[in-house]
Length: 119
Ligand SMILES: N[C@@H](CCC(=O)N[C@@H](CS)C(=O)NCC(=O)O)C(=O)O
Image 1: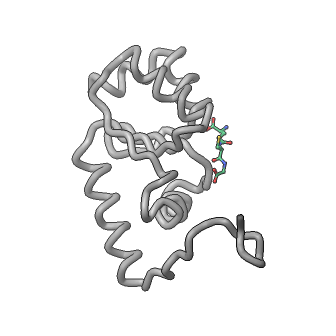
Image 2: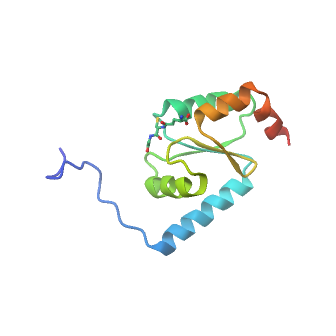
């Protein structure tokens, strides 16, 4: 049962600007240190498509599932600022955002994704 506002989410603490800056710094570090990072949600078909596409080329990539992550909504908001899109997945290769699920499939089909991974 939800509360009177119909909100079934547990109360979320509002993070300070400093905490958000720290999260952003950690994300940037993670993206820099890992060749491929996928910010995903477990139930998202576009994220599944991105992960399955990557599986054809490498098993060596980092997946952050934002649903269930304690800072998932803040991370999604920061990723929106960084990449211009607030949807998941957000896929990073070589430190650059290549887009979402559709973009990942398009780059795979054109052979570009494989090139990016071998560079
Ligand atoms: N065309 C996009 C579609 C992505 C999309 O619509 N993702 C949904 C989840 S399946 C989303 O992010 N919805 C907003 C949200 O979850 O906050 C792609 O290929 O990545």
